[in-house]
Amino acid sequence: MLVLVIAVQSQLGERLSLEGKLHIFRRRPDFVCLPEYCLIHKDLPDFSRAALDIRENLKYLEYLSMEMDTCLIGGSVVEADRDALYNSAYVFQRGAVVGRYRKLNPVSGEISKGILPGDRVFTATVDGVKIGIMICADALNPGLFDVMARENIDIIFIPTTSPHRPAESKTEKHKRDNDIYVRGADSAGAFVVKTCAVGTLFEKPLQGRTLIAAPWGILGRVPIHQESERTMLSLVLDIDEIRDFRKKRRRCTVSDTSPLI
Image (cartoon, rainbow, N blue to C red; front, side, top):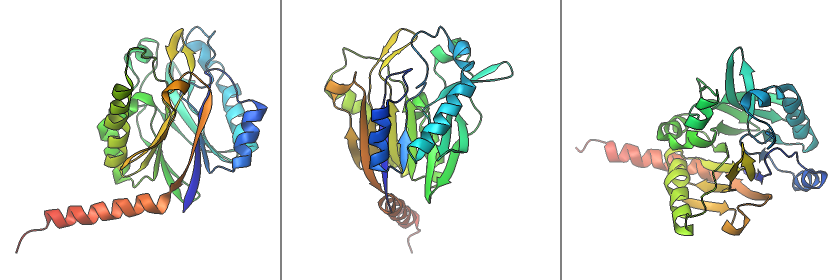
């Protein structure tokens, strides 16, 4: 089974243009992923103000999934639940809500601004493909990739906002990609689609480090000279290939642990 995924590296706070939506629609993707906090405009002062836009934002994402006729991982939005704020990723399948995931590992800057951690992982099966969601710093928790492995996830989508690191070299960037995302893909036995934003989040500059990884390496990534640009990364993923990888690894594991007679 082949599926087309598109990671949309967009400007934080900007909705997709008509041109962008038409480009995606014509490609007929199976999955489209937006960045973390994709709809927070640069002029918003804090997460509490962003949470007031939740109904409008979810309606937009729902309609966007219908317009593009795809399964949309809607980046993430800020939502309030009683007195708590959460960084939440909603998944829409052609206008229908598939489910919601709340970031399990918010960073210190989020916590200081009122974002609380969620309490469960998210998995779902969409058109025969089993997907999981993480958000940004969740990928720094190796245990979550192990959970995805036990759930037999095919693709892990990771909406992200990556801070700008002007002093970081290309070698350092690629090493971090391998250490986090290739290693995570290997642990999970899944493809990993990390989708970043460009622009600023509460006046802090971001860099677009969008990539797609497999257990055997990086399959595609936005080049360094486009880290500050709106762009899209698309790739056809072979679901049978990743499932075969998991089966072979299990056989090897069983063989390695079998007692000698």
